[in-house]
Length: 228
Image (cartoon, rainbow, N blue to C red):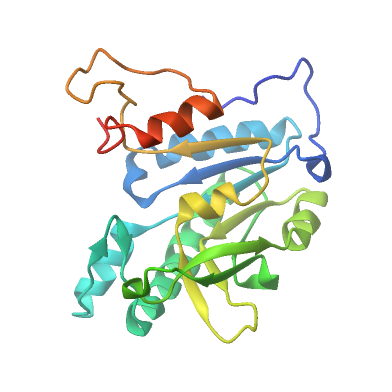
């Protein structure tokens, strides 16, 4: 179960002091989505400020296939043409986002869905890899929309899209990066990767915890690759 750590007492987290709890769920973890939402409901009931960022790659893939729109990935990032971007907006801001809002509501959680485009919550610039198309890198975060919602007890459910600084273009943003930009005190990634391994060929070499410095070092090593 997702539990806040490093706290001796229960009670509201003042997110203006960096006390926000952020969860990130990918579309590939639909099998445990219910458990995650149960955890969010429990943490919210205790008075913590919670925000959920979600992906939805399988849903996007199905819709692109249904519309016969080709797509490809480069180093794990989806190449995003204008037509692909339209589908991403439709799926993430529409069906996936509202499904999560409904499911949280069914658990007694007052949730409001939005995307990084709303209120310029996420402002992005084009990714330097031009072949990726309308994929963006987050430049800045406007915390006002989520602060207003959190301040009156809502759980924001955020789809990972962003807007350009001049509002002329939307961008597809990596959901992990979007979650990381939210200036959370605690950030939990829900993934279908079973364990982090120091030796990819040895299932018994699981790593339970990493400091920030250890994580950066691990990312530069040969063991950082596909998940187990």
